[in-house]
Length: 253
Image (tube, rainbow, N blue to C red; front, side, top):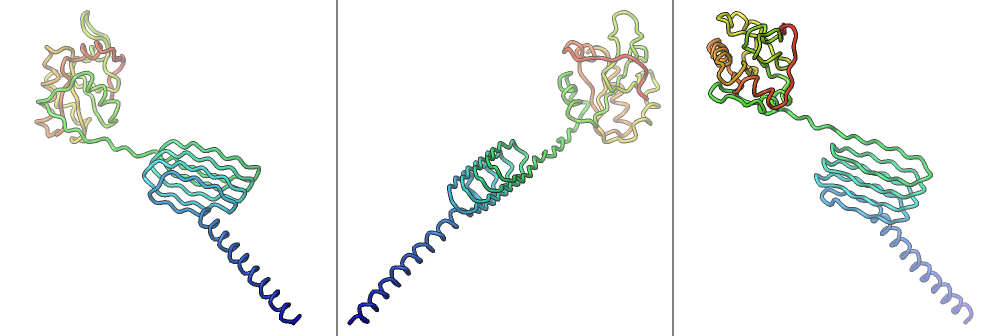
């Protein structure tokens, strides 16, 4: 009788221990699943866990991550959008972020932190602009074009003394910064060997809207095979009227 009672008691204890072990395993499994995240579309993640956190995020959308854990944290985020990340843990933290957008990151831990942030600058290729003598450009357009495309060649078609700033009264003093001097003096074609690339954008200008030199030189260039040529309407007078600067000095080689 005593043996049967002891056997029953032992069996009950074994069953109770089995239940406890199964419950513990289930809890560990749940914790591990919660603490490990691989996200391909979602962009907001909040994790509070006792287990280590391993997170890989690849998404075109903004990423907001908040993690609180006493265990180590490893994160890798790749996105073209902004990243906001907050990590609180007493354990080591390893974070890698690749994005061209702003990154705001707060890490609170007494342990070592390894962090690599690559904020790649996007390569911007200027859209090619096809110039035409039938569509002259305003001073504002020329100024913006010069700022955005370093390949633009600007040509001053006035007399050399007007270009350098040694001029008669009433003429604009100096030339647009970076401009080349190709005077419309009947010998303009001889100066074109300075410009071997006939596909670059060329913009000619002279003194005022009444001045024909810019149109004349632009026409000579087109006849010589240049394919991307126009002139600035209104001349250098409208350039200075917009508040844009001029420089004086020798002819650009």
